[in-house]
Image 1 (cartoon, rainbow, N blue to C red):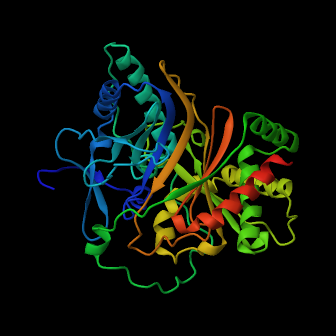
Image 2: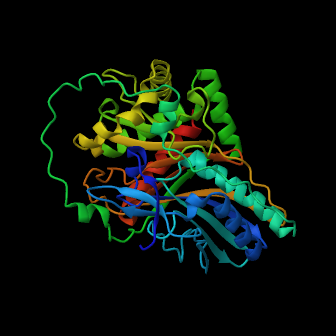
Image 3: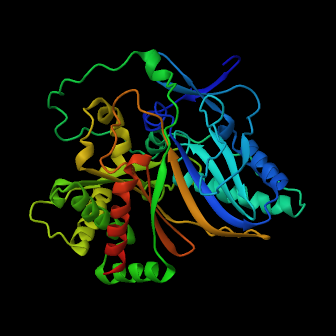
Length: 413
């Protein structure tokens, strides 16, 4: 890259997604006449207002990446004919070209429109806010109205946002123990130039009806737990059966949006990855029922937030990354995007919301493949709960019974 202007080096909370070149997709599935000219104008307005979407990542020595820009933000939009279920048909995301791209797949009167954002610059809350703005701009453009978005400030890493609120790194209990010997990292050149291609992924999905989703919420209210804790408990029971492990040998690990859990609150696009990390491992003798495990997840989260431990976790990332990799065979990874905003677009019927996540093999060796094949993404759109698991194609035969088990647990309370 020539004549690049440095924006800033990535913070640890952002760097963890750069070696594997992780992009996350936020997709609207629709029917009706899609105005491609209006969509292109809307996306250009979004990138102009949020130029970090058109920025790039450049490798730096000895190990790491830096946000850079090399002129006006590049507008990357692809349009392909094909199956809209294959959300990224024709897409070739590259963090050395642009960190936010838009991809359209058309088939007769059906289409998928996917905003693909690099995870180093945005978490789900940030990216979903961008998605809302994109479709607001589309509505104006399709109606022939003049529109623009106010320019946004560059988002800050969570480390800086927490420091500004007086949250500083505290010693972790047990940190005085001598570290275990680690294998050497590959050469810096190999770490900073991941030339591997993105491996193909498939999605296995559990999607409840509106009635089933409403019943699940009502059950949570009666039991005094959240929908997230119920889904996490169902995933623990599902993985216990699939991996043939007692449930108390599994760890449920998930991210927590910290924006409304600090003071003053943090705006949706004010930070990149404003995430803490929470986990729940059932104790020996824990009753292996959905309700008992959901109470465990719920109370562990509340305790971690009240003590401030979860707010500390992003600040502990340097130590976490330096430690030996976690055991992938006892970890159940999930992320919950919560209730998504309803997208209302004249002339189009947006009837579903889909997710996707792509990553290259991690050259650091710190992100081994999960036993289940991928992270579960939980969301609710149009009053319907969805759990999507993105995994390599070879995991499809083992994911199908997993999803069936998960659906049974969530609908037969």
